[in-house]
Length: 259
Image (cartoon, rainbow, N blue to C red; front, top):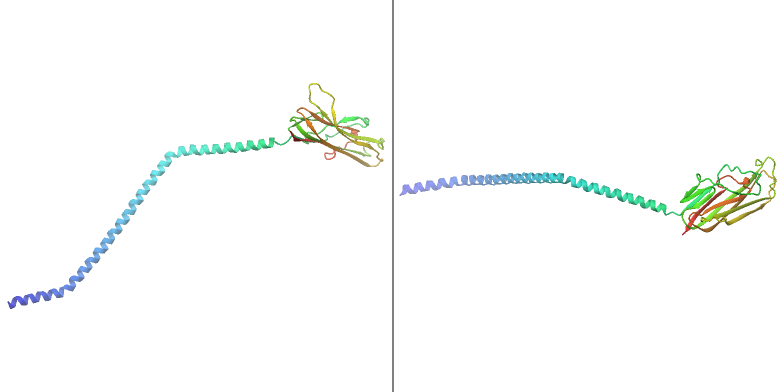
């Protein structure tokens, strides 16, 4: 009995001495298990991320393939858009042309040079010819000294003529001390039976010039008149041999005001 008690005492004593060692061993095992669990979770997360990335990559490839398959339709759609845009631009250009075409008819013509009027025809009435190549002529015609209307309406008609005399005009020293310088604007109506021209305006006077080296006299006039398609207007002057041949001295024109 005493021997059994002694052996029990020895086992309890040994167990008490080994208890701390077993506790330490158990703590180490728990830590290793935790670290292993974390490592496994980390690997699983990495594997999951890779799987998601591969899935997305495959999806993007599918999208690219689908886009590639649909590209002909998209190209056709783009061509349609370009065609519509070009059509729109053309329509705008056409509208701009129409806006330009809506401008009122007008003409402004300088005198045609050289004039070659003879001093022998003193005091005679002469129709002035104009330079339509150097002037402006929009939606109107010009022929044989006449501006012809292509669009009926109410027009303003104007003309300026300058007369000048210098020593080099006439070597015989023609007497210009009492010379008549007149300007007339006429209208020709476009009818089946051509009637006489209508005098629209007349201006000028008898000028008493001294025989000096240089003399000048200008006549400028204008008025409104209703003109029909085909009507013509022209300018006559007396003593055309004295006309100033410069574009700012002698000119003729008209422009439409309203219908």
